Length: 157
Length: 110
Image 1 (cartoon, rainbow over the protein chains, first blue to last red):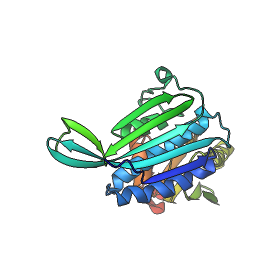
Image 2 (cartoon, rainbow over the protein chains, first blue to last red):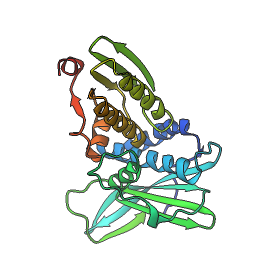
Image 3 (cartoon, each protein chain N blue to C red):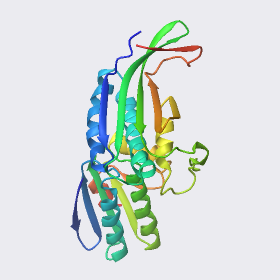
Image 4 (cartoon, helix red, strand yellow):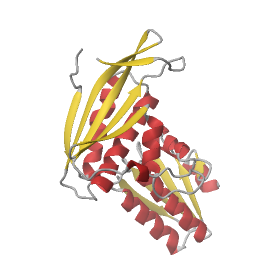
């Protein structure tokens, strides 16, 4: 089993670096074979996740560390191998109270809270974990399969 | 992101280029709100042809512009949406809330 990362980036929590991150992740997703639409969903999720770290975890401070790593995943769906990507985001902000994360009703004109909606909509798995003094957000996206996904087994490639 | 304005007696057209994210969406918000609240034109048009990416803060800026235009009894019209920009408005269930047209000719004639 190979756990090698495809990409690791350390960024300062400066909003102007978001475009650098998008510029690095987008071609990687294309190389991994995601469709253009899926690439856009993944980029949007990663961008919004890092924006949330800057805004909420670091309270707008522009000099704090953020680490992003990507690795490919394989999974078995009903005996057939499928491909995907796992993106891990680490920050050193205070723990996130997941019970207080907004689930904004979309029938109102929004001025905030859309970012989480974009993340959840764009990814197949969104998992938050506090590890010691570090926040870890795990995002997983699988390449689309023709059949509904059941009986899956995740295998890091 | 870069924003330039073209004005006549009826409409102001903002030509926006580059990505709109949390680093620059306050600039877009300010440009929109300032122009709308001046009340000199009945329509503010946003040319998004050269915008590849808009994040949630950019969408929030557009929503604030829309609310301000409703308050001022004017209109905010968008055209030239990239697939990504169209998707974020769809995901936000705002695509039908905004006036979205294909090109500048349609936006001016609307």
